Length: 191
Image 1 (cartoon, rainbow, N blue to C red):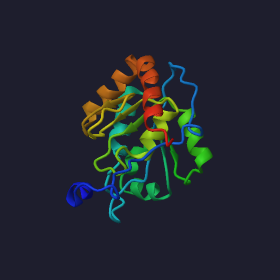
Image 2 (image 1 turned 30 degrees about the horizontal axis):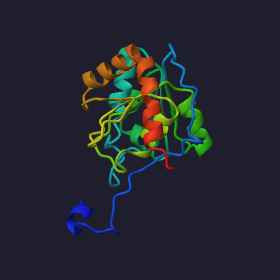
Image 3 (image 1 turned 90 degrees about the vertical axis):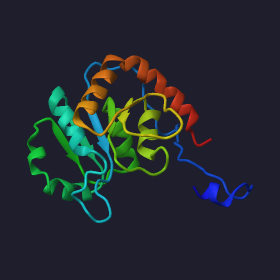
C-alpha cells in the first residue's frame, strides 16, 4: 500500500519474504503415514486466547481424521492452551513450545508431512513458515490469499470442514503437491 501511496519511484519497492532453500531442504518423497504440523506464535496484541494461527481448526481436523499433529513455536503458545485445556486431551497431539532453534525447526519440517496454517491474519506475503515448509517439500493447507498462487498449497477457509477437506485433498493428491512444492521453493528462494 505504501508503494502505491508514494507512486512510481526507483527508491521504494516491495520485497516479500524469501527462503534459504540451501538450508530448508527435504527428501520430496511422498509419504503414506501422515503427521500434521503447525508452527507459529499464536495470539494477537497481548491476547493469548485469540486463535490467530488456527491451532484449534488444525487440532479439530487432526481429531476428525485421527492423525497425529504437532503444535510448535514459542512458549507463548502454552498461554494459548491455558484458555483451551480440553484440546490437550487429544492423545495424538504433541506440543513443542520450547522455542525451537533453526535446526529444530528444520527437523520439524522433515519429520512431518503436511503443514497446516489456517491463519486469520498474516504478514510477509506469504509468511516465512509457509515458505520454509514448502522448501522442505511439505504441502501446505492454509488460508493465504495473496495475489500469486502458491504451488504446493491448498487454499482453505477458516472453518472446520474446510480444513478437514483440505487435509483430505492433500493426502489424496500428496505426490502431485509434493512435486509442486519444488516450484515454490525455486520461486521464493532468497537468491
